[in-house]
Length: 87
Image (cartoon, rainbow, N blue to C red; front, side, top):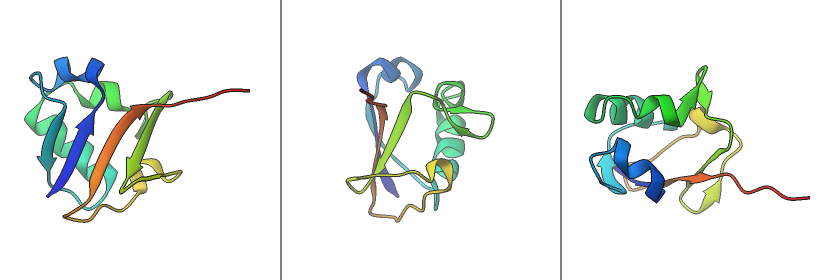
């Protein structure tokens, strides 16, 4: 199972946890399985089937542009982070 990390302000949606192991072959499956464990968390991680605007996902150290479609391995580290922008 992948190791999933949430940024601190999301821990209230995950029973006070910021790190957990979750099954899933894609980020979408991880989010669906997180929702089974922590009802309501999907509302803050996704919007209309994609990542919530303003949220980034990093899989194995690489920021992905595939969002929910990104593949995840059993030994992956997946970090949900606030997106960083600038100009």
